[in-house]
Length: 132
Image 1 (cartoon, rainbow, N blue to C red):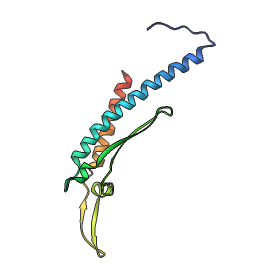
Image 2 (cartoon, rainbow, N blue to C red; image 1 turned 90 degrees about the vertical axis):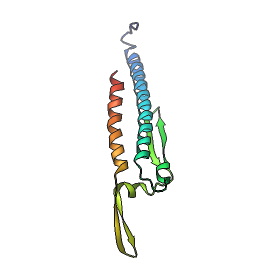
Image 3 (cartoon, one colour; image 1 turned 60 degrees about the vertical axis):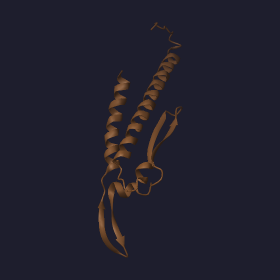
């Protein structure tokens, strides 16, 4: 890398340019790590989903929300078809009919476990990429 000399008048512009370049590199690292982790998490949550008819597990998908100018990047994993069941199957629910409780399904926390696991993986992988 060639050394670049700047005068004191140009120092602010040069520093701003360097920080913008660094910000772009970090944004690209976040984007790539988010895509990789989201793909792995999507596979994991599909595999951990309860299978009665298979519709619930097949409904999982991901979408991306980003704004590079604002430095915002988000990958959201959600169940597109059976979104009403996610809370009930993850945390549990009671079976009620005519005011009487017939039983209880204890949730298996398949979403919570996957979320916690991949949050840790994301932090480790992003830290590794930034430190390189």
